[in-house]
Image: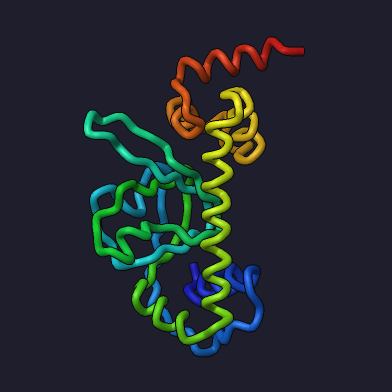
Length: 196
């Protein structure tokens, strides 16, 4: 993919949060990552000084417990900034992996370079803050659903938000994303099929 096109995608992504960013002064060295389904952009335990922009496709954040149990934490559709804030800001190992759920394209760039350029442009900083707010709101809504909604409602919400994945994502990944076991998910699917 053309790097100029990808950079324009990043600009358009931030423009939706805040107008008036001085893009003419942005200079980022980007590296393109073409990911096949199942390939990881970032692995749990790795450190990374790069931020990623998902240009096309869909990824999942998942972590492995010490016993090897896998937990799908979140799903992200392009276009979206993805990465580990902990790895970027604290230089600590990522607590999750980022895996392509479908064939995807992303590009990486230096967090430090991005941060320095962003912090010199008030509109850019405001756009980034609004992006972070959208992540916090999304996490808050998911946590609320885990506590307040039934497992069936959480599955229906998943089907609404990720209709393209309900028949292709492995049952275990869907189940862990909505906080239930694969057996419970099978029961819910059977009940929904038998409900007129």
